[in-house]
Length: 114
Length: 321
Image 1 (spheres, rainbow over the protein chains, first blue to last red):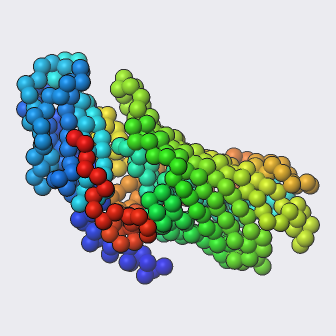
Image 2: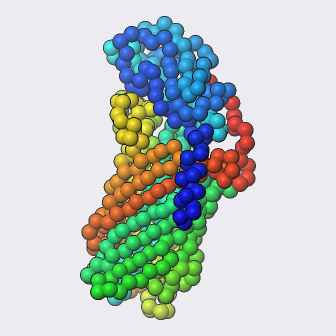
Image 3: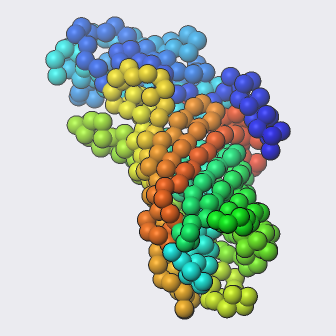
């Protein structure tokens, strides 16, 4: 058993390039209200696979307000936004980590008062 | 509690709870944006590549005076295909009676095969069926910690997250529930040694859990400390009720309610729960349950952490956005 524990801890220490791509941070913050319209949405996650990671931003009427394909640099995925008016917007994202684990999620942020 | 045959019955049911829990309690479970952690006392609703090493339980039995019991179990779960997996587990127990008498040894070996019926991401719903087998005669029969007969327990499990509720529900959307029900058949109906019938038992339980990771990434990021954002406060409950072939035995239901918390990391999780017996037959005072659980699919994604058959070596699909 002790050998198994040691092996497992060793594996955890070397397995830094794997695992699900959890959302670590978003800008604007998840569920936040920002005073001025942001120019982009950025999502920070782990081990993003550029070819299979995506983000979509829609307004209250369901129309897309992002500017298309996201840019991925390191662990951060960014997508530009069109000019946003006051309101609530939904960000839907999917990410594939380098070990092919898929993660997805969505959240809202608001511009101006709710 | 429990004297003579009643004592034996309650102890056997307690062993049953431990055995079913140990056999079924482990799987790495993503359903859409929802992550169901591996629960400690009951099962979560997914097959996966997992290992719990160890799960440690401490409690006092319902005997008068109560005995002190330690249970240390280990298990490993392996996917054969993407939706079909097997779990192998065993438990070592040490029961110390007041006055110095101690019995210790392994319980019977448990195996569970499970099939993933459904994973509905948008509704955060997962369904699972399985068959748990406790292999009679593979444990310490002489110590009374294992039985010479086997048991078969068909099981059904579900998990449901509430993230599909309207946004107006706010922080409540981070709640989720899991549940399980199983029906245990012994391979013998009568124990000649003790002169008692061996009942068929309904085993059931579940959990209500709150996902701080879900709150942060799906609902509202309050910028809480990172440690807090990895927590799942949880209450588990597990019960066993003899329902047939129980002539001459107590019909009483035993079970526990376990409030606790699970911390989830990228490659492993750690959980701790207090164990409250629901009645005197279920134990005395407050016990403890702790577990270190390893996500083999994340630790070894290209080797032992993937299904033996049908696993993909390339990304499974191009995402839609």
